[in-house]
Image 1 (tube, one colour):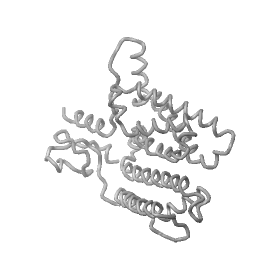
Image 2 (cartoon, rainbow, N blue to C red):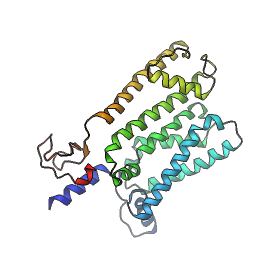
Image 3 (cartoon, rainbow, N blue to C red):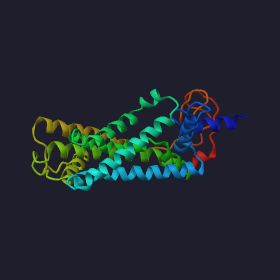
Image 4 (cartoon, helix red, strand yellow):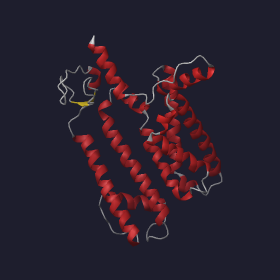
Length: 282
């Protein structure tokens, strides 16, 4: 019966659990690891509730990172920083235990970023000038399969590419804004606040070029050039995701090509017959 096999292959390709379940074992620790894997990657009611809570916590952490310029002078800032460090550390430890292969898990770029963010939370004074990189947490959140499972479950899979493009653009804007504010506030005329840095970043990315704020020196000009080139590329990617003909995610059993036309009956790469479930075309 090829249909269940193809459907299973499509599900695995579209929503993989990066390392699979931990190896089976009889001890309590092995059961604990499998339980964590089921919570982070399962689709039971309890797992979905847990994943929803994790996403809400991640969004709250991202909001804290974005509000850091306004909160850094407040007494509560350090306490919130420590609390978030504990939460991020526990999340990293839990995801590591839920992975079958720790070395493979550690090679993932989103894990590297989360480890770096954890380090900036543990030692904010040492990483004060790199605190703006915490905004990369937006990108690491977008790497979570939980979000995309939710879109597919509600028949919104066709918005996945556009949503990823929006997240990439938003992450770039936040990181560049933080870099400009950290590196040029007080040095560039017109940049005295985070809002000024955001204004300059958006004006540069969109190549509007009002000219009321410019970055001084050669490094300022090089920064502007890089921001324009990368920003335009991300805008083009977003436009492609929105306006190009839609494709569905389905792994070809023969060549593993994952992008096909919604009504495709054969793989355009190898010609293998496809049986794309109707649910992927909602």
